[in-house]
Amino acid sequence: MAPRNILIVMADQLTPFMVGCYGNPVVKTPHMDALAAQGVRFDAAYSNSPLCTPGRYAFMTGQYISRFGGWDNAAYLPSTVPTFAHYLRLMGYRTGLAGKMHFVGADQLHGFEERHTTDVYPADFGWVPDWRSPEKRIDLWYHNMSSVVQAGPASITNQLAYDDEVGAATLRAIYDAARTEDERPFCYVASFIHPHDPYAARPSYWDLYDDADIPMPHAPRPNAADNDPHSLRLEHAIALDAVDIDDADIRRARRAYMANVSYVDDWLGKLGAALVETGQADDTAILLVSDHGDMLGERGLWYKMTFREWACRIPMVLHVPGRAGQGVSIANPVSQVDVTPTLLQLAHEATGAPIPDAIDPLDGTSLLQFVDGTTQRDTTVAEYTAEGTGQAMLMLRDGSWKYICCPGDPDQLFDLASDPNEEINLADAAEQAPRMADFRARAQAHWDPADIHARVLDSQNRRRVLSAALRIGQHTGWDWQPKRDATQEYTRSHMDLTSHDITSRSPRPVPFKPKWS
Image 1 (cartoon, rainbow, N blue to C red):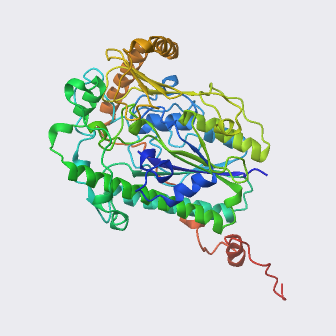
Image 2 (cartoon, rainbow, N blue to C red):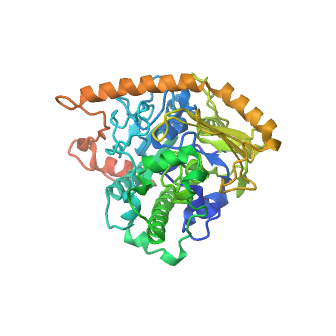
Image 3 (cartoon, helix red, strand yellow):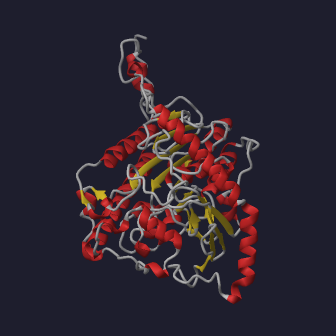
């Protein structure tokens, strides 16, 4: 019988090029590698928008962000847009979230029945980009190079404190699932913020690596005259030239990043061990995914916000106990919008519950169809409408070919099979004219850039005005306040102590039948 439960482990800013099962020989990711050996590794998985909030909205909804206005890190997801948490609840599931999802607005659940931690990032409109002045840096929250020049070991950071809580809350949820009297299957999301910058790692993980073993970027920073316009905009957005960095800085930042990948891997191992310990491992499908990647110095760039492979590609590994696909790799391009259809198919196969009719069209395809060979889809799409640009950017991946377009920028075309570092733009090659015509037609069919531009500007203006108003006078935040009723926890006088101790234990002990009862 198909496993009923679903555990999603989400990392933040994790590029597959820094994961062992994706070919990195140095990074230590034994639990991710074991998951891939037991399940299916998707070798061309993409973020549908290489920024935290937009990528997560695509992951949650199964829709491209242009459908509902998930433009940037201060964009709100309308409460009328269904997520996989809504659909799974209709199918009889308990749904829970521990960690980051970067929901913006008053709705901080979006279908989740339980949310065990607050978010690590703000829920308000404070991080709105300004396409009226796209060249202007917003120093209050834009990335800068401090993460690189200050990279190194740290015993505690804001993010370590957060992820320790996320991991502990998910462990508790797994244990609670084993001893609850609620017979519904669960879908839990454990969403860690590591290995997202700043590049500061616990000494125990930092010490797993030596400087000499850290791989340096494959592609150097191009000269400005040879660079593409968006990369030049990102250099300005992250204030790349505000500091001078050398190979030692780059190596130190990459070492800390790899250490934090190992930290997330360790949590994956602990969560998997808890499933085994509680007898739930064979009844739980596990999906490993990220919201986007990290350039990590490739082509001189850092962080995300680009369709270049290191930032736009993500790891995606699915393990479904007892199902075909053990140790399989899938070359077809897939993306975050494929997650919702996958979860609905998993739930249907496990419980027999009918899949609810989609309120909005789903843009994805179940990943299980790629495993079963029941789809021939070989394309995926990504959109970008946030900082570092003032126009709508689109990426189309078809087989090994990647096409990138943005109004005012030269088109880009790369053959990733022969040019994995994306150094040779073939958009103007005469022999590629038919392919370029096809890509341009598909881009035009996907959206109208002028319409997107107008919608983005309108949304930015509305949110900017509202944010300014809400900063005046008494502040009432939308940030999630975890709900906890300590009067119902552990041991209390209104409880039957013996009964409570028995029902809070897993596995259940032998029946207690005293002679005098």
